[in-house]
Image (cartoon, rainbow, N blue to C red; front, side, top):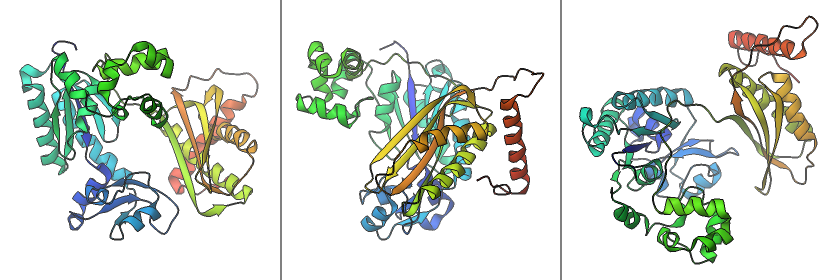
Length: 385
């Protein structure tokens, strides 16, 4: 643990659903879910704490949600509103420290090591932030206070909603704090790794703390074993990185009924590609990686990806890449969901001027022209096959 280092992890409570309950007071204390309606094939993005009492969670199929909680109130995603509130919350964080690392629309790390003379102890700063968020947005935020990012993120989830958890400072107290927690609470421990550890009798973080390094390396590999043992001892040397960049842009479509019509699936994919391409250009980015996602009728899911050289943001290139992935796939079952996404972003480089035709530049100009027409006359003004 670094002396004097103070990191907060602030995580909004059931953010999408809480915004809806705040904006619609009649929904207070009622089970609210945000996402696809129950009469459609789709999943929910968020659930209020009243809904969670029924075992409902994000990414759960909407029809399952309706069965578990017939009284659930389904609302569509209103991302414009959520982003508006998020900007207000991040602005509050910046009042207390310039070192804010936004992880997503509803959570961030804050390094408050150098501002304690201005605002008080780390726990006092956390309380001031919670009070400011509540008074200015009407929403609650749970905050974890610790000496590093791993411990702070772990702590923010300990007493939700509206929690404030401070991790002890000394090494001995940190080990005691971590020991009873399940190994699944460690970053990097998914279902597969958890099963391997459980079979070896390692169920709690305390078991990892006392495990022999050689035994762990044999189970998980040397790198993963070292990573988990460091976390089990509360060690994480990463710093808070200022700025927020999207890691990926993606769109998905769940069919109302499982679809066996390959051409219909292809057309849906092209529509998703067009939407992603337009969002990519709005962000001023080019993508190195494209990804195709297919979910079959039995809920099994495959993903395929392709690297673009050079990175691209024009619709034609993204369509060609997605089509190349799509045509390789056989349809062993009807399709339930299709998705398309891009990642590994770069800022577009200035195009070299060519004496003769430059296909990439022509494609870029065509895509930009389509964007302009759609923005002026409606998103569906121009359709591409």
